[in-house]
Length: 423
Image (spheres, rainbow, N blue to C red):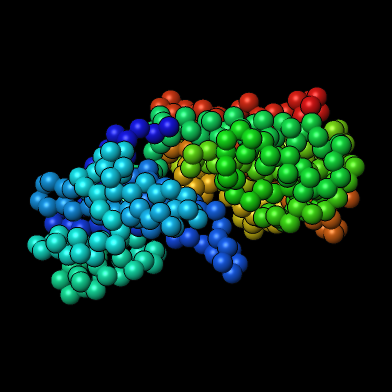
């Protein structure tokens, strides 16, 4: 759990990035229609949640910065007994004042009136350029001739790069649940018939253990389906003798996990599957060992490309000089994606990879990223030895950059061949 003081500290850090005499607004996510009059389960805007810890829709944060001082105001839905009967209790103004550390709390209906009181003497308007909201549009209308506009999202997302101890604890909790789910999948692969049955067992554990939502749509891809990177159909049969690529992670109290394991349906890897799997696993381990402050993520990716290309040449999947194959990008046919991404409030965290001048950011303590090398060989690729065709393998772990290196937050999720076969 993240304490209220941490949210307050985050707002203070954000204010330091704002120019004097500024007004900034961050709005909640909108309800999303599933079909007709039904909605998807509500999930708060990550940037709004990062600054407030507030989970209700139709709410907003307003920050007013003068020369040195600043104030922050929360706007929430008013209490409404009739609507609460249908959609659940609302926090309301009175309770929000007790629970949250804002200078004041108002109803969302009064945002236009209240914000008008703060516009005098302001010179800058900060908001998320990608978010559409009637509250942002109102402030734009009021300020368009007098204010300079700034994209607030980039400042918030830069702050989100470095995870606090409480954030890391929530990611670890998510991974504890995800570990149980992946191990259960390893135990059950032989006894189930369809990909969706395995998906159901994984997501049952997520919810049973208090992770009420998936961090992303689970991928349970048997055989050649694994060669579709974002395969989410999960409807085909589990075929004895083939591998299952499972990319599944839960979200615990808004913080994500992102894990991929590749396991045999039968419980035993074939010789060809072992050869490919050990190659990918060896690359993953070597890349993880490289992680430390001052390293570039692009260097990790380049080395993963070199190692995988070298491995594919050794196995006869690619032919020729590793250097020339890399230059011609021949390896990308079988390894088309990056080595990994930031992770946190979003499974693909929105934090930047480059600074304001376009220069790549170096890794530093507190960053959390995935490492996920893979190899994907379509069943119809006749240029590859027949024994490897139709195999897709990805192995993914979640890594924390520490002051002197790294911590593999998901190291307890089994990935050695002997460990997987034993389950």
